[in-house]
Length: 72
Ligand SMILES: [Zn+2]
Image 1 (cartoon, rainbow, N blue to C red):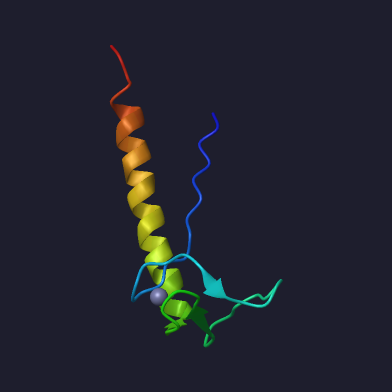
Image 2 (cartoon, helix red, strand yellow; image 1 turned 180 degrees about the horizontal axis):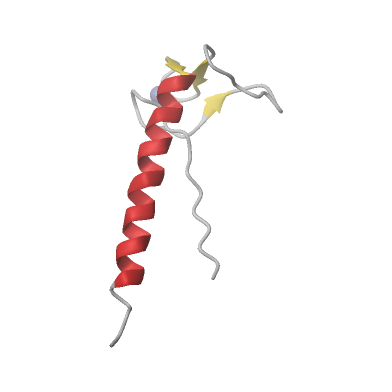
């Protein structure tokens, strides 16, 4: 079973997935990431929160697809 789903951090303002970040930069709580598209600062915690929600939605989606494949 190979079901790798990549979740991208998304700008909270324009939904772009590119951020101006130094290479190997590891954001931590309290940091902000600057969107490469609109240039606004996104609080890292809020980005992660959005990611978690997206992950949960994807998980639910995969689960319901798998459940629909069960045959009796
Ligand atoms: Zn943006």
